[in-house]
Amino acid sequence: MRLIHVTEDFVRSGGGLPAVVASHLAWQKRLGWDVSLLHTGISDVLDGGSCALVSCPPSMVGNPWRWSPELSRSFRALLMGGVDLVHLHGIWMAPQAVASRISHQAGCPSVISFHGQLLGGALGRGLSVQAVKKRFYLNLVGKKVALRAQVLHAITKQEAESLRNLFPQGRIEIIPNFIDVADVELQLQSCGAQPPASKKEILYLGRLDARKGVMNLLMAFIDAALPKDWMLHIVGPDDTPGLRSELEDVIRRHGAGDRVKVSGPAYGENKWRLLKGATLVCLPSFHEVIGMVNLEAAICAKPVLTTPHAGLERWEEAGGFLVEPSIGQLSQKLQRIAQMDDSELDSRGASLRSWVIDHYGFDAVQPQWIELYGDIRR
View 1: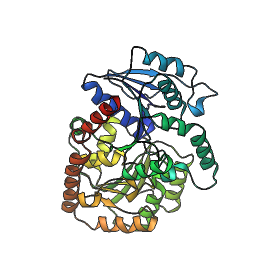
View 2: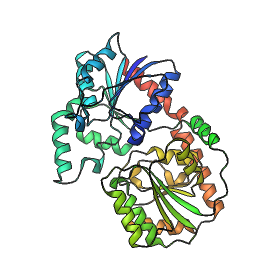
View 3: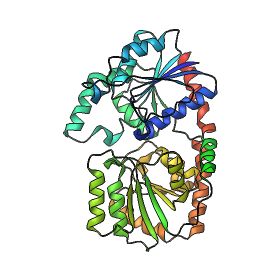
View 4: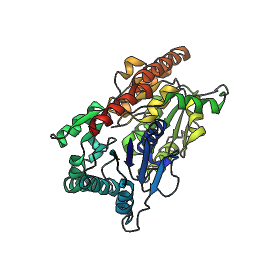
């Protein structure tokens, strides 16, 4: 199969979306498919393996929309010789709009994965500037991009419902995010053995984005007044402007600097060391489409505390923890978890690992993609 993926910034600091795209490139190349990626990344670009990566750096004027004068020419060049399918990732930027228009004109089928970009609060609230801009763009450009696609891909049931409300005439298919367990285990082996931990660490690993609930997690940790051996480590790249400074200011005002640490992004071996060393991984997002860190932490056999808005099926039954992302409820949940002994936490982590392998592992999800791609081609 000859396949073109299209996204904007295929970079490590881009969070879950580029990581998911990289996973697609990897498994499709292993099957011997001819796979290319058109993107606008400039530096810090993820490894695409042996796939053809075509970068179109955005112009100075077009940078907010990730528009480049090279997009049309580069995409048309990729289409030459015939392409079976175009897979768009995201809806807000120029690469998807350009590729959607040209592939439609060429009669090449496409599927679009929204990666939670149209889910709930992601569209903004009320009459805020962000909400008005997004709705205007969605009506002017986004709906055309979506409805040209043969399939609208949703990662969770919640996302599928949002898409049905926006595009009732579209064909919507649900396939969850997946994790390559064998690859994770290789990464963990390369980290070696972890020294015995002297503290119990709650780890937040993700972008510093207000929608991820990180401020509420910090306030909940302070309010919970957990035993002295419990720490909070917040790790991730900046996303919401000024949020890192706000977090650090709260830590100073509450005198929590000896128990809370805020660090920059962690990738590769550093990321896996953090996950291996954590007692609890906590990602209290206000809205999310599964979130790769939830799955990665589970494969490390760590108990994971997240929210009902993360789209994870039967998470508590599987061994994880769920809580609404309010400060009060987070604080109470942290207090209850801190009362559990190590054996109970280890047992929950092991149970969660088995559940994720069975339901979100590569072997469980890959056949769904192969079937969908084949169905679109027919």
